Image (spheres, rainbow, N blue to C red):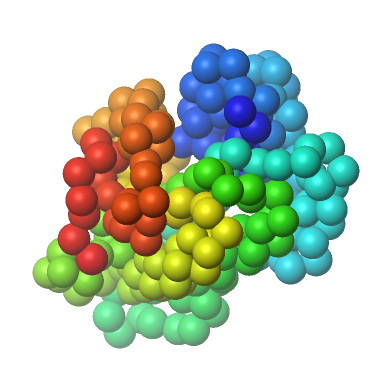
Length: 228
């Protein structure tokens, strides 16, 4: 298997790379800067900024020169409110502004779809695409205010990825989005319920059992369906 994980320098992405490498897959992981953690796993680190179309194009060209296919694409790269300047976090009503919201949408929603589009020639029939969303992107589960930018970005990802899934299905590719759960990473914090190992093990088990009937779906880390 040839697998590609975006945002693989730390957190969930690094754990995806670790578990896939342990399975014997040929793994490529994207980073914006430091790839030392991937080097230690025997994973090939490649530079990619998912918010930069020029970076996406250069990355796709680089990868296509190295491999003739990608069997599994995991769109994991993303940011939350901590990934933008303090004045752009958009977590409270009365302090909203456009730049932070648009930045999170660009990174968390537009970026994964553009990366997948750029790699479409490498996605052969039977390939699988897993885009990491969040329960905070669920409209049905939104029962309080706040966290405008991050929630909007993940809801946008859900719609873009669902539309993308139907187009990818025409070339025999299965594509889904999934909520990884509340995970103890830099983004999730120390109080989170799940370890990266637990979350990623569940998500890879989901990937293993995907069929064309799953395409376009939204799932929990444990494989159950997630409400939109």
